[in-house]
Length: 288
Image (cartoon, rainbow, N blue to C red; front, side, top):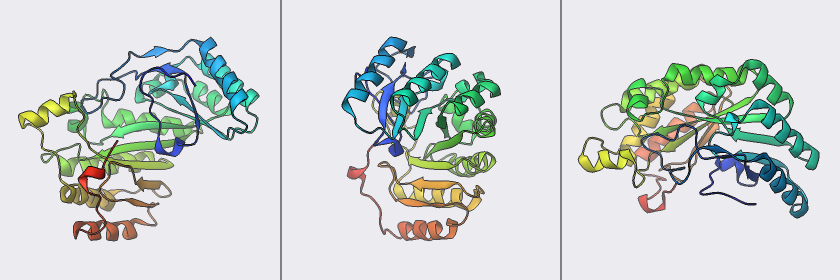
């Protein structure tokens, strides 16, 4: 495949065919993020997209999953996405799933009829970043939306038949707002009840506004014990029956996985063991 700049995908798309249909992130202003700092947001020419899928058909005997990159593929016009989905399922009749990243903005822009059409054409799931359910944290991190708007976007996707995977970031509230961040994030996810929840742990990336705040002393990065106390509070407050929960990203100090609310007590017991120093990942092994 031909890729422009850095390419990112969710952990669950490790074995998917990844084709860029957009470049970069439509927002690209979050204070903690450097993922798409190497390119401007743009639509990739449709002819190039077609060529990549045709090349992939010649190379790969079996393509079970396709992930449409970059950071907000849902921003493409609906008719373009319908064409792309038709191309995928035409070339790869064995394909079982097509997914992409979606922002709260792109979910807001698309009408419910458009989202239902895309679902009918085979876009099964979208990944969306909540980051935090605390509005003060979202404002500081220049997310561009308050928690109510993000929740509404997620609810809209689910209402239109799409599966929803939502990520949040432990430690994003620093020492001042860690309680509000934990409880607010639990509340927002409880209101969305997405099929999948991913909890990452904050890492400070070079060149971001967040790095400057850390260097100036206006933002204090939580240590592993503080992160686990926040995780404990989050798990105590979330009510998302049936949501598959994963805290097994490379950035996490402790690996947790289960299905809410069924496995809440088991995961809280694991957090308690982590607070006792058992099973924690050393700092040098963490990564994004």
